[in-house]
Image (cartoon, rainbow, N blue to C red; front, side):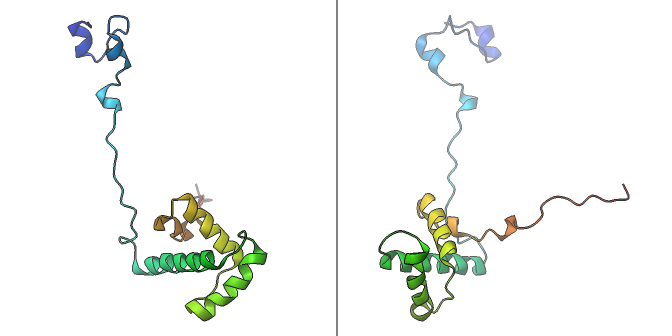
Length: 130
């Protein structure tokens, strides 16, 4: 049994503690899981529409695709997207990238949120006067 002075400072001697006590993690190290809702409802309407458009295109292609997600297989299907869904068809490479992100995220809509903020130069400009 650990001494009382050790309990005050949060330290216990592993050799004095029972096996069960030595295996137990301190309460400070055990975090409660944080639940994050994976919805797109909090996003602006324009982004929600774009995510839904991407889901429609992926679903449309998935139901008609026979074979792999290659240019040869995707281009004939994407040519029908405009006439059947009344949407501008993306390139085959774009659809393949969307599909990969969507599948790797467990088919969660947040994976299809446009990532325009990651484009361009993100380094701060240096003032030549400094």
